[in-house]
Amino acid sequence: MTRGMEALLRNLILAAAGLLLLAGIGLAAWAFTENEEPPQSLEPKAATAGKTSPELAPANPQLDQLARAKMTRTVTPKAATTAKAAAPALDSLIRIKGIMDYGDPKSNEAIIEDVKSGRAQSYRAGDRLQGVDAVVTQVDSGVSIQYDGKTVRMEVRGNEQSEGKPMASPGSNVRTAESGELPVHP
Image 1 (cartoon, rainbow, N blue to C red):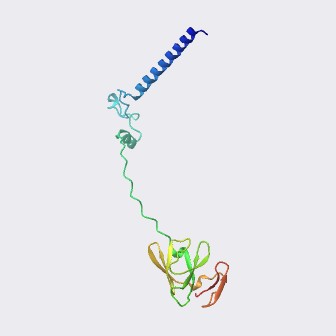
Image 2 (spheres, rainbow, N blue to C red; image 1 turned 180 degrees about the horizontal axis):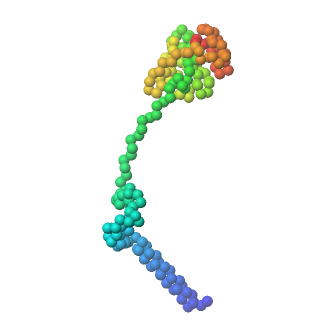
C-alpha cells in the first residue's frame, strides 16, 4: 500500500465518521425538539362529535376523566402515622409462680415464669424482666411491674400448678429442673 492510498483511505474513513457524527447530532436534535402537532386526545373529533355511536362512547367514564386530567408532579402529603399497636397483656407473657420473703422488703424476690419458654427466674425490685420490656418495681405480697408505661399489679395464683406438680407449702423448698432449689410462698 502506498502513501497516497493510505491518505485516501484515511480521508474516506474521516468523512464517514463526520457523516455519522452529523447524523447523530441531527437525530438528537429531532428527538429533543417539541413536535408542532399536539398529541392525539381521547376526545372524538369535531366531525364525529354530534354522533353518539357505541364506538365513540368511552368504555369507562372514570378512565376517560383521568385521561383528560392534567397531570402534575405534585406529591400528596404523607399520611399521618397510625397509633402504635397495643402491647399484649402482661399476664399473657408472664406468670407469678411465687414470692420469696426474706423479711426485708428490699431483698424479697418474685419467681416469674416466661409463658413462652416455661422458664422461671427470680427477680428483685429494680430488675428488668428477660424477654419482656418490663421492670419489677415492688415485691411484697404481690408484684408490681412497670410495663408499657403503666404499673401492673400481679398476685400469685395458687391453682396454676395443676399439671400434676404438688403445691408448695409456705416456707418449703421446691426443686424443679428450670429454677433449682427455691423457697416458694404461694
